Image (cartoon, rainbow, N blue to C red):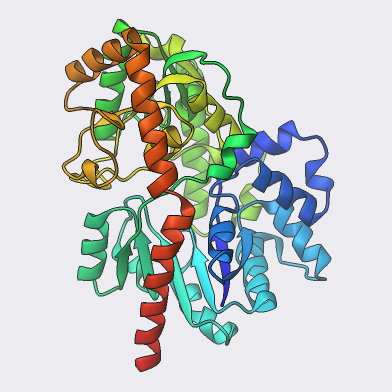
Length: 412
């Protein structure tokens, strides 16, 4: 069975990797594609590798990397309209590959009407699947998919209530990352890799815990919010550019035209228009965001990886991917307690959990002061992840879900 997996990666990551690799944008499609996958871009080829072992043929597409997609189009004699390249090239790729299943990893960037039309455009398509791991504006954006997969049981429940088929599938770790890392030393006492957005309630809670942690022990924060540490004037300018660009977009000006407007075009790339800096108590602890291999290396270089799950995604379940990334590279995970976290790890034996900022600080101190116990927990957590939480394990569950869904579609 043939699957086309359609991935998305952060715009900041795209810029960073293309800036760091000279002339990458001028290279062939396969050279660019291999560079991105080697760097563990997004989910890289983890699903491809795992699913191929159980009989699937998987073709990977990273849909929002413009130079990569244009290279594919050139190789196949296709000239897209610039303002519509994003959708047109992907549509052409779907027709060219003729997959049985489309597995998409972004539920907000595509017009639901376009998604609904794909089975008419590509007659081989039997199933269109989408991953949904973050809060969405409305279940209407999911209605055109045959199946929604989510790491959040609450999301699965709500999506099903809206009339769309949904199934639970947790995140995973790819052990093939380990040989690509240096595992010889620890540079950071406590690290956190993720966002700190001051207009999101649970992010404020995350920031407050990090403040208390940093008062007790040294914390290093690798975050997109690093770029927000600018002067008030700079933040005002960025906010104005963001507003201008998105007003133009809202009234129907094509994105390709907006990108041609000096200065205003920069507003399209700012993150959600959120410009409030993090707490002054954390300013000296901020580092630029890390992605791909750089992110895994930061986790591997840490004695403790701090984690804080999103209550917007799930109030009862631990859902985020950082649990498996941190434990997978052999680092001790310090994460917030959730009612069902023991579904994945045994608290205080394979990971360490906290229920309050005070308990988080207390346990972080204990872990740093007791390195043998910390390493014992880290090793147990890694063993659990490598045994039970790999992409190969998730692929087995994916296979069951897909085959059941295909049977139901064939019976209709």
